[in-house]
Image: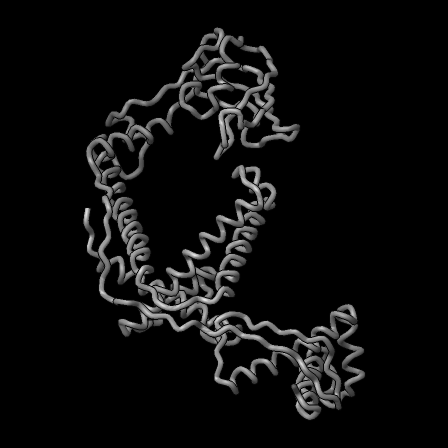
Length: 411
């Protein structure tokens, strides 16, 4: 409850800020400020901004007076608007950071089969690189058989709706590489160059419940031509002409091996960190309030929707692409959010238990991972209230690095 005097003080700050923004004299009457402010937005929105200013200031002061540092955004419920000369009441609820600890802060043991670079792995990567540089040349027309490479126009529909990933012009299909369903490839066998055929074919649903649980597609295919795939031979001459940083086949092979070693190092470290964090989570002691699980799940949902929006997609597009529904996504997010939450708290507990400290570079790295390159600015973090978020992320990164570096690997 704010008494009338406190309401007046808070409103005076609000009118001072709005008056300055509207370039009014510092002694402007509040009615004049209201009129100027209401011209910048709908009147109802302006009233809510006015109320939220008072509520947020009062809530922050109340939490500080009580010595409460909320771990989640406090929830505020106000059923009226503050008016000068009158008391004002609102409800405030805050969730504090749970008291969590670890049964042990010692290094963890993990079982992992590290990726090792072998001659066979180098050969396979070179084969992939050479395949990627293959040329497709016209071949003599003949009826399609398994193993052919053909150029086709394809239009595919599922329940009357276009399927973009299975539709295209002048698509190159290798009928033996498994990139298209077998039931589709079977319908192409026997077609002649220039022929168009419309046919239905079935594909088992992901997570199918039985043999009859299938998706039924309709495709219209035109065979444009037969192609011959020509993969270049790995010779010194080809390397010197086609590859940067190498002039012989031996140099190219050595470069590929070095690249694989670097990839293996990163993969192994990531695997160690992931497995070590799982083990550390088992040591977490204490109760995490349900509000944290809800907030974590909502955060994952918002992150997914932002990612999709960046690609010009909707959540319905995602359901179609991943062959799932709202309920299945909700379960996935619940499981993932729970894992993320517990593992994150375990890392923070490890950071505190080992008396670790953050350096400026730790904060900069965490900030840029969260908000983009060049985003680190201490004053901005304080002003926007993001410093606590960045500090928590930095603690988790530092603790995870220590955990991965010290993990005892068995396997």
